Length: 90
Image (cartoon, rainbow, N blue to C red; front, side, top):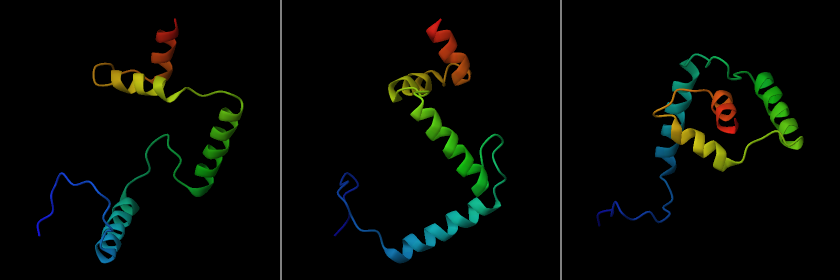
């Protein structure tokens, strides 16, 4: 029986295929250089998480609808979020 490509019902993945995919992704990620400005070590990630949690607790965050609005402008506008929100809010 052929699989219907329009059928998005849940199917359990083949464990062997998933393990193979996981190993291939892990190998790829291991050779990529760190992305400038993003935390890459466990310590840097933990520190970034702590800062993010403190920002949320202090109310320093934007609703997802605002982030979506900014992301939707990106194909035609090359601006940082900070520049865009400053211009948007006057």
